[in-house]
Length: 389
Image (cartoon, rainbow, N blue to C red; front, top):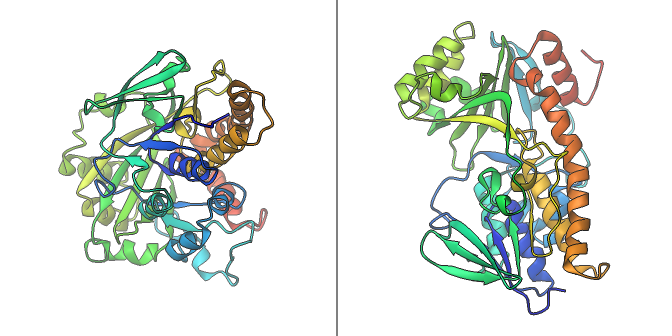
């Protein structure tokens, strides 16, 4: 079905790059159009964990597992959980047995930039077209004309939107808008944490540090470049980021707010806030997945563009599994035309994503405004030993 056809993937995140890799392994012509100016234009964010039956499964299919093993961050899958007073509730750094590849419970972490780099290295030269921010699609004679902000235009027989929660491709399939979950996070970036917040640096210990209670949660993760990213989550009214009057581009103003918001917490957390020079306000939105679009024969979506949901550890994994399933449907020979193949993929994708999104939304208050009971439940979940506490 794809012989002599041009495939355009919009968005060069893990999902889009995985799709490009597995399609090229089938001999299919594909380009990835990415809005970043270059491969090194920006830091990609903190670490991401890949799961046995999704992200790692997709990595195996790409043939890049050895490259992944050479780049993952050994030990970064360990969690430490504190209460607001700084008391240790759980410490996986003390676990007796280390999981290994092949263990269904092993979720190795990798820097997002390193993951993207190894996927790009697995593509044919020139596959990723940089500085290509999509501004418009136009259907002409069954094909799509893609118009980019830099003035470039190109055409494709099939367009796959892998361009995240602000997808420019999604409106050509559905007018269903994102809804606010009730939770927002303040994200901070810290350079050289070993000197700017040494106590937090010691607590992170190259793993994941979490603190929960008193109506808020904090997550601190290492980056591949040695820096930290942290996320401070709470329940907020919709549009509070604008109505609050806080200038999130002003580090002094954000630090003042965080120090007040977490006033009853151990002072060690203030060193985290005060070490950050960059903050971002992020409302957590989601797509209501009970509202599906009508399948078309020349356009579809993967990843957050299709099933945006608040962070739950599944986002990158779902995107990579979407890529694997879409490639399989398009190339298996089991369907008589592209529309049937795309419909089969979309049914799998929605059936997988909908319950995860519903579960995430149902439990989001326990994360962002945790009670003592919800914290105990979270400890039990992470320890894989329910009822132990």
